Length: 103
Image 1 (cartoon, helix red, strand yellow):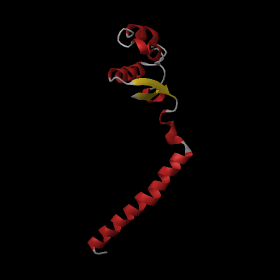
Image 2 (cartoon, rainbow, N blue to C red; image 1 turned 60 degrees about the horizontal axis):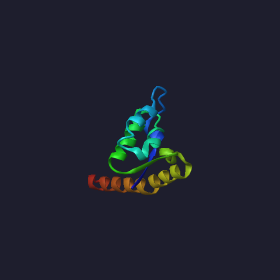
Image 3 (cartoon, helix red, strand yellow; image 1 turned 45 degrees about the vertical axis):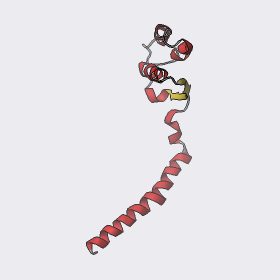
């Protein structure tokens, strides 16, 4: 199964982190993924790659991460869901509560 990992999910690049040396030391365990391991920018990214590889998944980096949530159509969708689903349900429950209290 192909897994797509997002760099932004694992924090900013660490200037002191050397992925090349770690990738070379891990080459005996994952020889086909040495180049992918060498692209990690911080220890958390390397750990995420290793977890996926240990589960037998193929991995690659994707570009967007959770940035899709910030796009206007998605934000508008959340607003519409809140307006047309959550608000009527809240009003309905409030009306039931008021009726039970005798108001």
